[in-house]
Image (cartoon, rainbow, N blue to C red):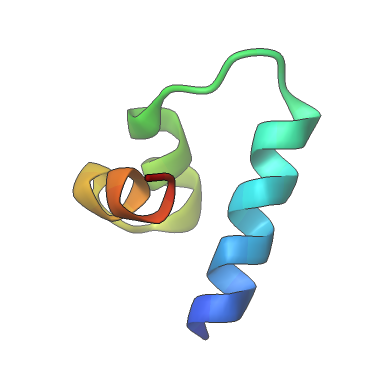
Length: 41
């Protein structure tokens, strides 16, 4: 998956749910929690 596609999906997941943990987002995107933390800082 391209980086831009993954970032777009990440934004969509965050917008669609009231509360999302990094672990939950990482599992849905098939990446590590560290990747989620790097993309959101």
